Image (cartoon, rainbow over all chains, first blue to last red; front, side):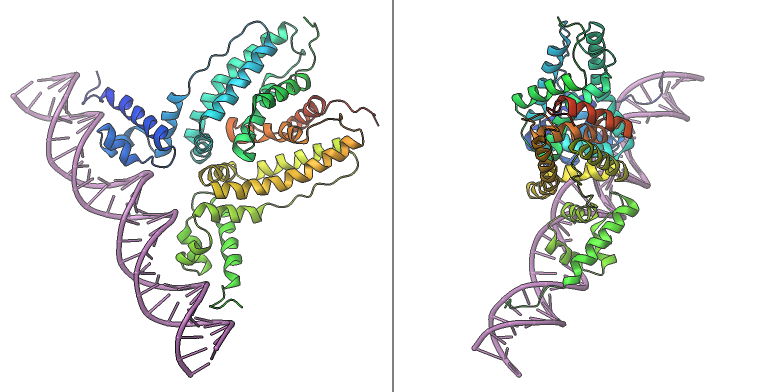
Length: 193
Length: 193
DNA sequence: CCAATTACGCTACTTGAGTTGCGGAATTCG
DNA sequence: CGAATTCCGCAACTCAAGTAGCGTAATTGG
């Protein structure tokens, strides 16, 4: 069907794997496109034919690194949300702050890359929204709770601490903040238990 | 007292002014050290003798750009906090997202620069903390309110929206979120009015 | 088999960040 | 004044991101 020489299907996998390894090794520093190309046994130009900038390459590597921590729906919306928030906090602690910050900066630099990253977050937020709506339907959260605002209230302070203030994120902190958000934004359950 | 040739005191002012102008003009892109040096009539080496990296230079320029929106204490802690949060939201809207994101990334890249920036935020947070404590003392906020957590709840979602999700920040959104934080984290006033 | 087509590798290039070395200018102390 | 000291400008350099041109390999259609 397609006329010319087919793309080497192994290139993408090899490159992303090498890129991820380099990021884990030396973090943001020590990540050069030349090194990725050399280690993956690919010409730099080939690399640029698939990922238009270094930032795109980093983003691709990080996207595959994001362990998909699934969002469980046990029927207790509050407990599930607290758990999910704790998971996110753990992820933010584990992944170097620098990597998160770089990703954010990349997203701001390139519109297309920003859309790509926002797409990633949106998928995860979508699942959380549905969980919140089910919880609302069950009467575990105040009716009229805006899912987006609740998510912002739960997750926003975490990113703020990691990216801006640098304050530590303890599990106690997360729990306290989640309780506050659930009582403030989500209000009291109308039909307690 | 000091022996050798004194530093040209006008250099810093000129450079920071030029840097700020360049940032306003072309945003993050189009900001090159060479261009700053050339426009300020200073050798690039001189520039690097004062600011160790380009990031430091950008940070210095932005720091002076930060219009010090004062935090007023009218005696009504809740109203003052809502107002301050609206001011911050306005600032986040005005300054290009890219600039904020770059600053965050810079802070993550260089420890020293990160400390410098965190120092900036800390100063402003300190003033807010004191306002919250006065409000608590007046009984306008639940006693035992943790100032840091309240600030996180107020401001965190804003940065989260700007940096991560890209969702817009309307005044209505800010007000709703502030109300929720003030009822959730700060609880009800023990001595209403 | 042959032409068109597409992917790949290689070399060389441009641009901007950051460094190095040196000579000259300004200032203080003796 | 002269020596020590510190700042400045200049030119040349290294390094990494990203680009351009060209030759070649692989594949499909005729």
